[in-house]
Structures are given as structure tokens and as C-alpha cells.
Image (cartoon, rainbow, N blue to C red):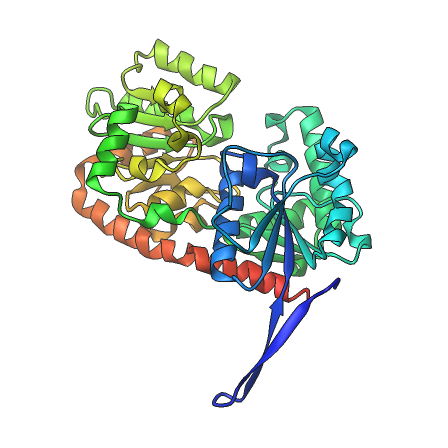
Length: 406
């Protein structure tokens, strides 16, 4: 430890002698400041939860370049650290991956947490303890979905982090098992710390706010919702096939939030060839969505979720599946897959399908549309399951992992 402070508290009634560690904790904050998808949401939620519930610590966010999207200015115990010096500013990726070690020592960091699969090269030689969060090993399990170069880069970084970090956090049992299987990592070094989501999803959005968001983005009166990158693994095409089979039964559209490339075009080609243009709405292409800060930083998402009839998320494989949890917190039903870690995220409250079976997806859409009594019961089960993933619980498990190292 570099400069770890602590003090004792004597509890005479319980005859306890507690040692409270005061840590300087550093984080790889690239995703927290710049990423608008799952890795960013995980990082921001965890950092804000820890700064809120464990205020005695000092949190240093090492950010390779300034951001206008997100900030943590509301927290007095959080400090942003940017590269200093000509070379570090010119080569921020090198600073983040290696040179940042000098700054860790300058700020007397006791423990450094790589929030997304990476730790600085050589950090184990500095005396600074390190933790890495591994979200998934999808590039190992489905290598055909990645370019050769990307696959090699990810494997090298992930393996290095798992081999040199003092502790490994997996965000699900599925991911823990994958780390042990693919990298032959000792399972005793891996702790499952489930992730949470922005607490705003658990707050009931006012009718006025819902109407503002509905008008701003021209949302339909009723809609189903898909949130996520539009890539093959997440299976938007399977949802579209289900909607096609329901064309003569249910006319409620699907609102899609997310971006993509070649696979998105494949989905659009299917939509056009099957005359589904009125059924599938790509909200991220809406001019208001492109220009609205509330869409870009996701602060308008709780109001969108809470107006949806259901979240549909039949992914073939996930590390966790944060939109599932966001929907459970929002008290809307969830259709998701019965494979991978998704039953961990959905619990007993979700409506499960085989992701490859569009007929099963269609059946659950019809169930949600017609069976309101069952939907109400599932929503309540989902809400109870979501409590397991509260911001406090998530932050507590991570802090406990830190404490075991110091």
C-alpha cells in the first residue's frame, strides 16, 4: 500500500473493534466519460454508487481526454485526472494503457480498478493493487462475429488483465465460468459482482415528463421496446420476424434504440421486403434523438421505458443484459432469452424464449398484449428480483472485493 489511512472505532456494546480503511481508489474512466452503451452505463452507475454510499474514500477517475457528454461534478470525493505533459496528451491511449502508472503513484493510489477488461501494463510492479472487471468473453465464444485483428487485441488485453490483476470481478456467473474455461483462471480469484443500472429507472416518471418525452421523440401511444447495439448476437432480426408473423393480429409497433452497421442494414432489408416499415421505428435516427442531450446521455430513457408495453431482448448471448434490469426497475414486462446469463438478470419475472425461435417470441408478445393479469404478476416478481441488483448492493460487493486486497 502506498499511503493507506485508517482509523479505529470501538463499539463497547457489541465489543467490536472495526477498522475503517480510507482508500485512494483509481479507475480507468474512459468508458465512464465517453461510452454511451453498456460499458459506459456500468462504469457511471458503479462510480456514482460508490461515491454516494462509501463517501469516506477518495475516487480518482483517470480519463484519457475531456468529455462533454458525462461528468461527476456533483461529488466532492471524485476527482478527474487527465493526461499531463506533451507526450501523454498526444498519445492518450498509451497514457491509459501504460504511462498512467506514474500518475497512480503521484496521487498515492492504493488500488486501481480497470472497469472494462484492461489494466495498465506493468501495474503489478508498482505496489498499487489492481482489480479488473470482465464483462464477457463473447469474442472467444463467438469469434466469427469479430475481425481477426479485433479478436487478437481483445484476447491479448483480457488475458493479460486476468493474469496480472490482484482480483477479477465478473458481472455474472456465466462470465465467471467463461473466464475459468477460456483462460484457465483459478475460479477462487474471480468474484461475481452483479451490476446495477441508473437508479432513475426505479423512480416513477411523472405524467408531465412522459408527455414531454413522448412529444419530443414523436413516440406512438403504444409500443414495444428494444434497446441495444444492432448486432447479430442481439437478435433484432428475430424480433422483426416475430412482428411479421403478427402483422394481422397486433399492430403495436416496435421502437428500436441503438445503432449498427452491416447487420442493421440486413435488418432494414428484411423490414422493407416484408412491408414492416410502419411496425419498426428506429428511434435513434429521429432528428430529435440525434440532437437531444437527454437522448445522448440517456436521461430521457426512464420516461421511454415506462411508456413501453414491454422490453424485448432475445439475445443469443450476453455478459449480463443491462436493458433487462432497466426494464424490471421500470416495472414493465420483459421478453428475454432462456440461455446465457439472461435468466440471472431476469429471474422469475421475465417471459423467456429460445432466441432462435421467432414463433416463441411472437407467442410471448401476444401473451403480454392479451393477458394483463399474468403481466401484472410477472412485473411484481421482476420488481422483487431487481432489488437484488440495487446500487448499494452492487457497490458493497465491489468494496468488499477491494477490502480483501488491502
